[in-house]
Amino acid sequence: MDGLLEGKCVVVGVCGGIAAYKAVDVVSRLKKHKAEVHVIMTESAVKFVAPLTFQSISGNPVTSDMFSEPKKWNVEHISLARKADIMVIAPATANILGKVCAGIADDMLSTTIMATNAPVLFVPAMNHAMYENAIVQQNISKLGSLGYLFMEPDTGLMAAEGEYGKGRLPEPQAIVERILREVGRAKDMEGKRVLVTAGPTREPIDPVRFISNHSSGKMGYAIAEAAIKRGARVDLITGPVSIPKPQLANVINVNTAEEMHKAVFERYQQQDVLIMVAAVADYRCKNIEGRKIKKAGESLTLELVKNPDIAADLGKVKGDRILVGFGAETHDLEKNAVLKLNSKNMDIIAANDVTQDGAGFGTDTNIVKLFKRDGSVVELPKMSKREVAESILNEIVKILSEKK
Ligand code: PMT
Image (cartoon, rainbow, N blue to C red; front, top):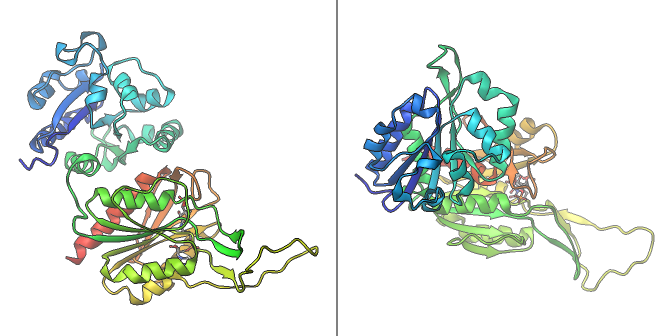
């Protein structure tokens, strides 16, 4: 009993699927971490596992019927929605994903999901053909872009059909580890120091004009926030953006690429991990006019000179530190990303095709492919930037633990 979830309320939603029995193990593990656990079952879930099983293990009444809620819950079926620190839907069927996606709230589980402000983690498990169905994938993508959290199903032999494919419920231990990361006090980056660059740089032309790009800072800030949640101390070196600063990060505001380079190099030695998300201008004006340039001839020529490449310079001196970069690509994604990975001596590059819908600059979602030093590739579907951040940190944590 480690108490990592002490004081936390986890609402587990169980849908009707062969994997429902595994949710019993999830509940049991949550109890071992001292969580308060409440189970809501769909009508079909009770055909797979008896509610009494969940009741005995969670120590709380189980419901599947909105109209016979246990008295304990103050009549309102939304009491649990308010009480939850996180809702975990495992197994999540195509049916519940479709319902939530369409805004349908017609039973205890869908109503509670709709009424909660807590994070909702869907753990889909279903027949592999159903999982790959375009409608299901669209629903997952839409829910992901709305901030719902997802775990990918495992690939393997499907219990019911004896077929091989992607659709198995991940192991209960993995589900609980994910819950711990979201709301628990499990800190797999405890004691680590992480430096993140984020946002655009602004390269002045004259006192009122500059060269910049569309970076909003969302991707870098999501990484900083997720690393803080995992226990890391974070230095966030940010170009000018208009989103809220992550609480608990040491935020250093800069404007130009040269300022960002200086801020990074003043701090990189104390770090374990360096994550370069900023969209740094490759060039700056050779001469910055002291006074506003007046409109004169039909054309105006600006002479640009190369900015320092922060990631490449870090690659030369990084030593044992983990260096992660991003590749903003519009074409030849793999070729360009791998070139940057190697030339800048990175451990991982997260390449995003910024021409794709829901990817790159300004969006709340991203679509990235992670190219790693060992040649392996992790292809992530469209997810919220927070989810992308978690996936990148998972890879970093793996490398950190290999280095131990
Ligand atoms: O901020 P958002 O709106 O959320 O958008 C996110 C994003 C699109 C900015 C992000 O996902 C992204 O792709 N960031 C990298 C942008 C970029 O400049 O990519 P690049 O391929 O030009 O550079 C490759 C790497 O070198 C990057 O890690 C970059 O930070 C780094 N670099 C580049 C030039 C330079 N002078 N110094 C650098 O450190």
